[in-house]
Length: 342
Image (tube, rainbow, N blue to C red; front, side, top):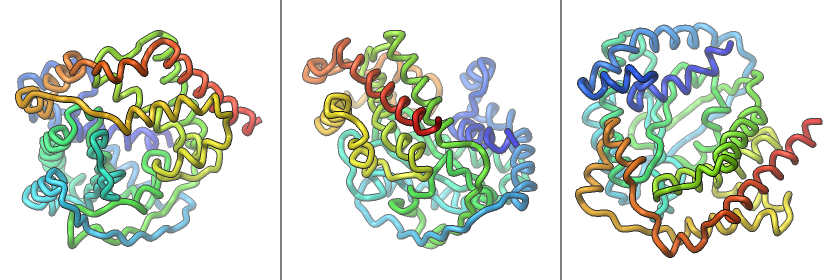
């Protein structure tokens, strides 16, 4: 049972670099392909367990009809061309999400994207390793779009559509997604599971991680760390609604949906964080953009450790009181869900 919960995260880690241990860090410096080949058999074996268990789960069906991406974002178009040329026969579908999916991207936007890998890929460890390495290299397009992006692909296996992990990727996100392919993956039938991996468990874990960081005074030292913290904080309303109501909500609508549960004073920090997001801007040299866009471990290390300085106009919003107010809202959110659970 627990392996079904672990598999989506493990598959995501595998596709986005296959770094599971300190040893993987070392070997990735000498071989781009070895980390993927090293874990391919293990991932294929865990996929088989997922596939064999899908018929035992009580489910309800949800159908989606998605539209192809028709915007003019250069990076989305580059990604579509890359997937068409190198990976189309291996993917059930590929989608852009969030602000890219609604054509509302701005200077703060991430390149949010999901791939669904065909079942047949998992029958051959060598094929899976090749697909993973190609998808990993495509992250350079994401990081060129946003050099400060802290995540890569969201990943599902085709078999998971029949035993869908709502906790990993809520189906509501498909309502605002666009397909990167014009002729495949446009029709989705998803069977949602009703197993005990509760939204509340995920919410509390997420809150604890954020609180630990803030309480230990691990405040952002550069722009990358600031964006990681602010992005995590702005995900809280969606996770709160999911824990409160038992179903997902598109992030854009989660702020208004959650706001009424809190006092004006408690919620004011969320408004301030959203204001920073709305006015987000920075300058980056061509060399740093090139370096930060590499999808390899050493480049990502440089992004984290030697990122851009926080601009002075942003610093004026930050300070110990700013982070204390973040803690207060997180604690208030936890209390609301705890009271509801009791």
